[in-house]
Amino acid sequence: MKRNLIALYLIKLSKWFSLVMPIIVLFYQDHGLDLQDIFILKSIFSVVAVTLEIPSGYMADTWGRKKCLVLGSILFFAGYLCYAFTDTFAAFIFAEILLGIGLTLVNGTDSALLYDTAEYYKQEDKYLLYEGRVTMIGNFAEAAAGIIGGFLAVYSLRYPFYGQVFVAFIGIPAAFALKEISLSKKHKNRFAEIVKIIRYSLFENKQLCYNIMFSGIIGSATLTMAWLIQPVLIQINMPTEYFGIIWTVLNLTVGFSALFSDRLDRRLGMKKTYALILVFIVGGYVTLAYSLNYTGLVILLVFYIIRGFATPILKGYINQNSFSNMRATVLSIRNFVIRLVFAAMAPFVGWLSDTYSLQTALLISAVIIFIPGAFFLVLQLRK
View 1 (cartoon, rainbow, N blue to C red):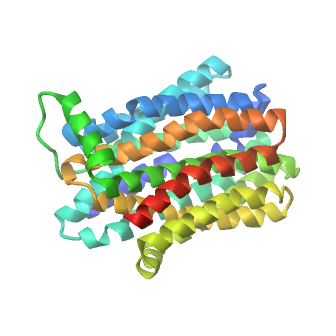
View 2 (cartoon, rainbow, N blue to C red):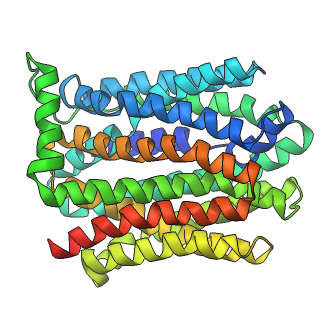
């Protein structure tokens, strides 16, 4: 078990030790892109993810978790290699496609293998603890990278990308070191099997459906906020060297709160936890819209505390309602929802910010998140 845990920690590290994230908006702007262009790039990434999300999860269930993680790590490395040595919008699109395919193969597959590992070694009850640790490691890695990336960017906005190529490479040998725990038999009609799993997840098992939809909406909300942080910092005239430090503090916050997510879940239970998550996520958007100054940093801190609680808890409930031979596919359906909502929402949010104001973009984002989020929360409570 230790072998798989260490390898999954390293894969998480290679994904989340992001030297480029704290300064990537500055990097794009340095190459002539505005916020709408940036969100178009990220929408392309999400469209790729939406297209491949469910097939990649099914591939992990049938072809093998390890093989998918190996291939995903290689493509992830290739995407950053492209970013590091190109400077055109078309090249950035190609890089986003590579990153989208690579990340799609990894997302969900790593959590499914982690759950299978815990189940195989009779430690299924500790899954949420392990998932919290993996989330904590990822966010601690992103936090540490934020400081380094921010200071590297002071000298050149290109330097963080050079470092990112090396970091992404770490995931490749780690994926090769994994031990496959469970592999379902190969099916003759894979399309029919995918349809069967989708029907079960979204129509037959109502509890699982509500979990997937609510988790997907919250995931898209936190993803959108992650891309709005740098425009907020730019608006309040934050010096470049502090971008990485702020990014670090926020991700350390996510890491610490993720570590205690199992305690929060045990104390409040599913219904109260879900309600708390929705209220604070939507409230974060609204309060930040009226606090586009240094007070907004405190609001972002609270928002990221809730984000840290939400990720392992929401994944945990989905895993509990899934069978092993479909778990990666089900988690991919969740990621599909996240990327679909983000792909539809992001260009609109970018256009609102460029055409009207960042405050308008934040307020309308809150409405877009709240309506479906409240709907599926009510269904959860009634169920």
